[in-house]
Length: 108
Image (cartoon, rainbow, N blue to C red; front, side):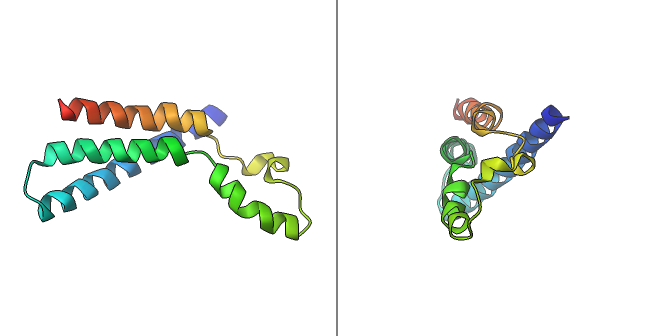
C-alpha cells in the first residue's frame, strides 16, 4: 500500500510538473519568437532541477521547526503518519530523472 501511494504521488508530481513546464514554454514562445520544442526541453530541465533540489521535505521541516519548538512539540519525525509516501530519493528517481530524460529527448 505504501508503494502504491508513493507511485501515485510521483505520477501526480510528474503530470503537474509537465503541465507547468508546458505552460511556461507556451508563455515563453508566445512572448519571444522561436521554436516551442527547445523552450519546452529547457523548461523540463529547469523543473527537473528544481524537483531534484527542493523535492524533499527538508525545507518544510526547517520552516516549521521553530514553531514546533516554541509550542513545546517534538520534531515532525515523531509522527510517522504525516510523512510523505515518496522521499527525496524517490522524488529524484521517479520525477526528476524522467523529466530530465524527456528534456534530453526533446532537445535532440
